[in-house]
Image 1: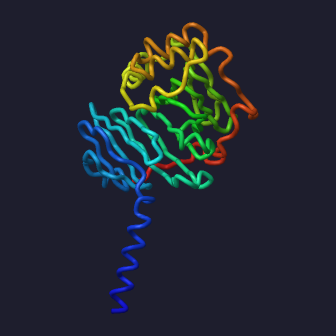
Image 2 (image 1 turned 120 degrees about the vertical axis):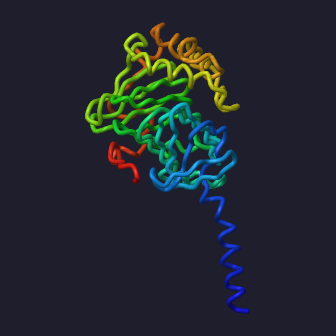
Image 3 (image 1 turned 30 degrees about the vertical axis):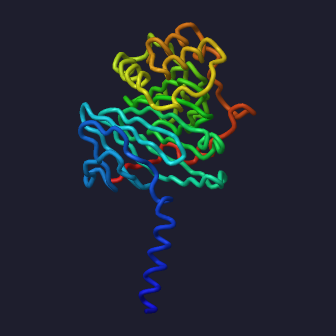
Length: 276
């Protein structure tokens, strides 16, 4: 009887904390989408599947998936992408304990954060080989082609590496050359064609209500809002960038200010080694 009761309480305890183990729900898997604790051991996912922290996701050619996290943020993984949910901790009534740490090893993604994510801006970090991305409440896209490229639909992101910090506001396009070179803004005309195509496709995706959140306050932000609503980079973010909003003057380098804050992830920049 004692052993039975011990087993009962153990199972009850597992049931009570299990929701904290899971981080994301698989939504709209298309094609070859696999997940597991290693790339080699990854297995096909199914719609509605729950994923835990420590999960690696891999998308094959012409394949993609949307991940919907418990705090409301959504992440779209493009084809030929490898993404790692390194750490995920979320409790609705305990914002100080929030921790959302991800790694994009290769490929491309679009991330749309939610109100819960924005309540503790230092909690979010997206690690790339070239830098760590912190958020300021945002909708942004990243593609790794060595270097990495980014596009900010709304809000702002900070790219941090050993060269310092660069902040990109809504409507900005940017490049992160390497872990030792500071990220910089760039015009649409200088961005590689394949990157423009991928950003256009991802920017036109319906990501849910969060994708259109936030009112535009500048021409660049208005273009970004158009992209988030479904216009894509060609009719949205790029339009703002070409008009000069977000590229010249929208990038701030060096120390933090009251607007940008800090991400607290500088020490881990560029150190991620994908599991195998």
